[in-house]
Every structure is written in C-alpha cells, then in structure tokens.
Image 1: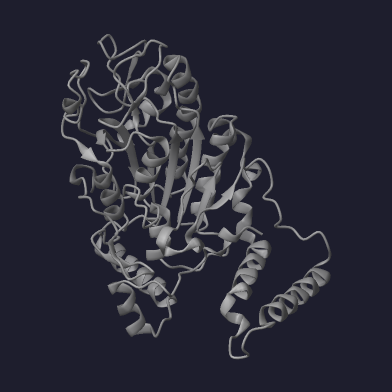
Image 2: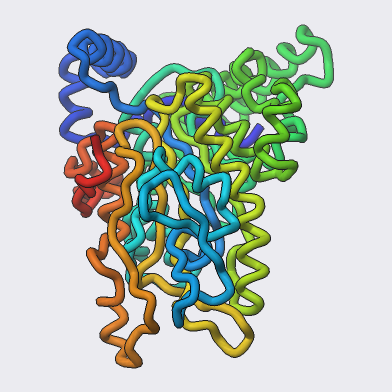
Length: 440
C-alpha cells in the first residue's frame, strides 16, 4: 500500500494560531473542527448565505498550454497564428475554436487572462503554480490540496488528496508532512493496485497481526525499553490502509459504474476518465483531486500540438462543469484549470511557441466563483524587443500568488494565517491578494 494513503488526518506536530485554539477547546480532538464546520454551514444555509465549497478539483495542464490557442485567442493579429475563434456564452468573449464545447459553458467560468509569474522553467514554474511560492532551497511549501486537507479536517475512509495521472511533480505536503502528499493513481479504467487481498479475510488479518509483531520486535531491538514502538506510527498507517481496502468509498475510483453516455461525454481518454473520477471522488468527500494532462510543451509545430491537447481538454472540461451541476456538486466544488505558464506571442522558426510567464490564462469555476467573468487582457501585438517591457505586456497583471489567495478565500481558508514549520519558521499560507472580481 502506498505511503501517501496516510493522508487521512492531520499531523499534530504542526501548529498554527488556529490550531492552538482548537487544542484549547477540544484537548486535541480534531473531530470538533469538523463538527464546528458542519454547524457553521447549517447556520449559513438558514441565513441564506452561500456556503463555501468543500472540495477542489485541479485540472493540471503540464507543459505550458498556449493561451493564444485556448482561452485568449487573437485571430488575424501578429500574435494569433493559425487559430480561429469561437463565440462563448460570455458576451463579446471568444475562445479558441478547439474549445467549442467549453465555450458553451463559459458563463460558468471565470477566465483570468493576465496571470504572471517570474518562473519560466518547467519544474520551478510548476512548483510556483502548485504552491503559490517560488522554490526555496531551505523549505518545501505545501500544495493547494495539502493546505486544504490540513485546514479542513474530516473523517473520509479513502485518501482526501488524490492525484490522477500524476506527472513528474505531483502535489506534495511540503512542510506540513508527507501524509498530505497526493495519493497517486493512473488511468481510472484500471483497478487500483494492492487494495484487494489475495487470500481469505481471516488469513489476511493473521498476516497483519504477524506483521505488527515483526515490525515492533525489530524496532525494539537495541533500543531503550521506554522508547515505545508505537511512536513509529506504523500501526496507524497500516490501519488506515486496511480501512481504505474495506471501504465502500473506494468504488468512487471506478468510472465503469457510470452510464456509457456519461463516460462518452468526457471523451475516450485517460484524462477524460480522470475528470469523471474526480467528480465521483469529491462526491464521497475527497477534499482535493488533481488530474494531469501532459503534452503541452509545443516548441515546434505549436498549432497542431496545442489543438491535439485541446481536443482532449474540451470534452472533459465542459462535461466536468455540466456533471458537477447535474449532481448538485458545482457549488460544493471549486475548479482550477491551468498550467505552469503560457506560450510566447512570437512564433519561432520551428513554427512553435516557447515559454511565456508574462501573461497567460487560468480558469476558475464552481463554488463562490462568479461565472461569466474575464479579468485582464493581453494585446494583439508582439512584445517590445526590450526584455524589461515584457513584464508589462499584460494589462491588469495578476501574479500567481493572487490566484492562490483567491482560491483560499473561496474555500474560506484564512490565506493570511501563519503556519509554523517544523523548524519554527512562521509562513503565511499565501502572499497574494484575492481577485475580488471573480468572487461572489
């Protein structure tokens, strides 16, 4: 069983100001937090106030999708390339023609067209987009999903943080601990390995009992008696894994239970199946699901490469929005769609576009996000040859940090709260400012 399956509950070794208050009230009983959350949501429902989303779905487009072929086309201009545009459900707003189905649900989306960062390398930019911080050699920051799971404690029998089709750099727990790393799986058309015993239940339990005895005996060898083997936490890890193996919630990973018409609407791709699995997982209480679509790095033959990937994204994203609504999960779920950066306005000698962090598109949707909004803009001209002017290319620029603060604000997580790292270093959850235009 994979170690990330341990991410069911919080790590009491990490404290924030809010955590200390929790301990003072409940003597460390973190389940009171979940009870308080449910009571607060019930009170909001009675008052007519819209409750915050409880889950996050991240559609991660690894490699750097081109904004000019997708959510910010400029057809017929010096930067437009071969892409044509299609009308969307937002008045006077167009998407690239390969996103025809997504354009029809654009009134449910908030498109931020002027996202900027200072990272143009794939690994560093991925870290920046997934954590809201630039890489730091002295610290590993937690991803969005890790922070969400840490801040919102609940009792789900399967991992609360899941990565489907993970790439090179899946979401991590960082200084919050490895138990907040995403639980990684492949194509949902295949069963999750190692979750079904190959022997009878009685024999399986005997094997687990024998394992406990062996591990504890070996751990105790050569150590003082007062050093209790339980401090290794291996018993908790094994019991959580066993709980997952026997849980009915594990069926949420199995998209074959869906009607054929629903599966077909997402597209016959691993990414489409991952998006459908994400809906099923948040439906049983999973806090964060990341689904990766790799292959966007189009330094050559950009138009064809981007359109091939958009042909996978379009049915999956549009069906994700529709199915969340059909299952009454849209207001309970926040959706983020984007990659580590965009592509250059210039088309290079190989008919490709290179890395461009100076104005690219990110899409938000779902709980507490105001649909039908477009924030920021990029011009239909080539940037100045003056490299310093590139950072002023986008109108109304919004740094990556602001995207994170917006997501945390929508999830009702105090983005200004300081968490204390294992070495005693205070770290704010986010250094950004929420984008008010896209929040309800």
